[in-house]
Image 1 (cartoon, rainbow, N blue to C red):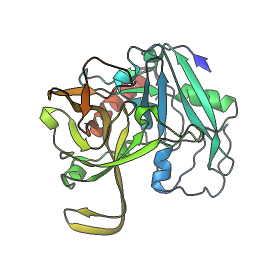
Image 2: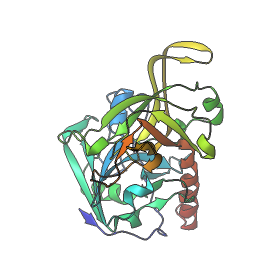
Image 3: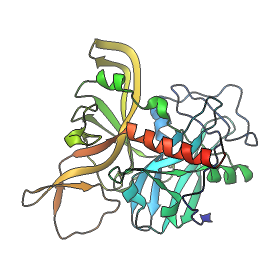
Image 4: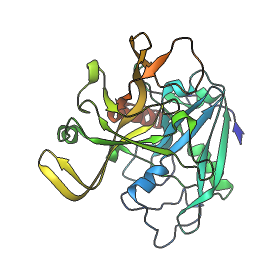
Amino acid sequence: MEQTGRQRSACPTAVADPPFTTALDFMADAPAAVAAPPTAPELSITEQLAYSTVRIETDTGTGTGFFYRFAVQESGWHIPAIVTNKHVVEGTTKGRFLISRGQPDGLPDLKRHETFGFGDFPKLWTPHPSKDIDLCAMPIAPILAKAREAKTTLFYRSIDATLVPKPAELEELNPVEDITMVGYPNGLWDEVHNMPIFRRGITATHPKLDWNGRPEFLIDAACFPGSSGSPVFLLNEGGYFSKKGLILGGVRVKLLGVLYAGPQHTVEGEIKIVTVPTQNRPIALSTIPNNLGIVIRATALHDLDALLLCRAKANNEI
């Protein structure tokens, strides 16, 4: 369905949406939605990650977004949103993405999806308050409300601030940690099942350190057009090494950050830092990726959180 862009001054309406958990915690979108089964099936962590992202298509290319719950209150009130990079939506006019549908048993319907299309696409996004941080968020409560009115159950998993590492947790990390990135490199996806592509790598600089004085760090992973906005997770299942030694049987998952750029070198050998493009197109200057990605530390999401919360309070929504 095509929707026109709303003004950024409008405050998003918050509703309940399903959080990301280590054991599937099914929640209805709202009281009018289909009720959850008494005992919801469990999904693994990686299965949940597969439903935490969306493939963003625009008239200029593709990118990756992920579901995030902003301004979570003790009452459960929050602002559901999709997060991506500013450069994914800037300069576009139209955009769309798909969200999988849910089944009455609490599991996703693997072959049924809802398509949401928008005009004036950039106007739907709230940019990070710093011009130097390439993040933005699109509140999606209106989308959820329309789905609810149509008696459509959507299936997705939202990340929230509980998965963002605190300073003490960052201190416990080693310079080299396993990472998992979820997204749509070169726009690739499983179109039939609406599933993203998983890529693995390692941290190339310590996540706690500001790389070159910016709230960023590097990962050693192949980063291609379409990967912009991909969430980068610290993910260990079955055990991991900490500074205290080997932790057996432990599960560790944290949102370390959001991919936005990568160093490349030209055929002449010059090193350039470029945002991960949203499309594949011929260019005059040939560049070769270094298989490194630049990741905005997830703590930058706290600034968007404060901005959206302030706006909600100003509009008497909380």
